[in-house]
Picture 1 (cartoon, rainbow, N blue to C red):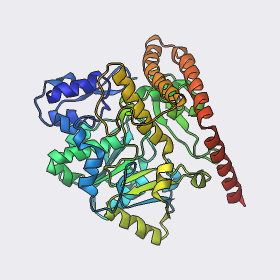
Picture 2: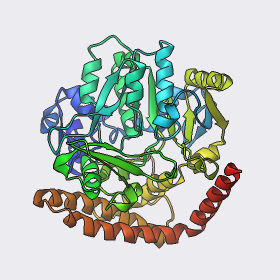
Picture 3: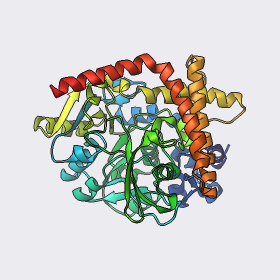
Picture 4: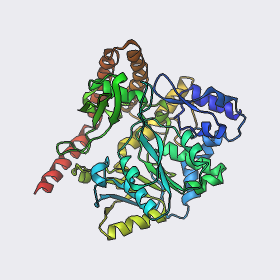
Length: 464
């Protein structure tokens, strides 16, 4: 089967994550479809480029995260099937200036790339920045470049939003500068694969930082939050997905939306249809078939330390998985100088901090793969095998409900936009996510109660 035939399977079966790698190497472009997702231009399928399978993160299974990690980090002395290759694991946050205050969690992602810039190890940063919207289908965020500390820090905060890399890769290909790249695991994997076929990209991107990833959301998800908060999609201009405040718990996802007249509305996303992140509304289907939660091919992984002892601090604490000795040295020296709070955690704690993501992307993936095969559908080859885990019927029901939310939310929100009627989306998705949440609570009740009790006790101790 040719490279374009395999890529056609990815695109036609909705396994494309929209990274833009194929568009970059074929000099084509990425388009935004009616669901608010990036897809390659059809012209990419006319290409005879033999590297298409190499660049696509869902093809060439022999170039999986474990293999890439082995080639990159074989000198590290630790390996775990969930964390990949790594040197050490920490929890922590930035103590100096206002990095933590301005960040989604502990502020470490913005701090580390700023530090790389200060030490002249890079000339700039490739990261997701706010985009000026002119049409309803325009993205809220796109990849951009920053060359100074001010611009880097202005682009802090998490972005639950689809992005593509072809434009920015084309831009840096014509420079002699060096960059740190920040992205979700599949984007970092695409960069690593690109570096296998393009030595210049090894030089241009010497550092990669991965964000722990639950999944990517379409542009339509941002529009749905805006609509649910009272701002019509046509008038929505800006969005911030997580907000900090005295009365806002670390786990609460309180968003802010702004209209074209600069009116700002703040609301808890759990109170909006499909707004609870983990319910899977307006998620890319591809994300249900990815098994890399933590960015195993990156030099450094940064996420939220979702452990009871850290959740008691509403200011936010990062999980850090370090694979690059240069970055480890920077972190340790900053700790010695009281610039960073850096707390040793075990690899078991690091895994536990992302337990929900691992369940969804490991045991859940094995079930979804088998489900698709049983239905006669084509699936990409993953490290996780179909039916690899022995699941209870209750767990299967939860995964089925999540997939249903993902599939129906795409269709219903598209219809709601077309008919200019938010209720088309609101009523059905609210009912489906409520049903899903009840199943999740009943299945995990003992653990949920234990974690809540631990968080309350730790908060009370902290006040004393």
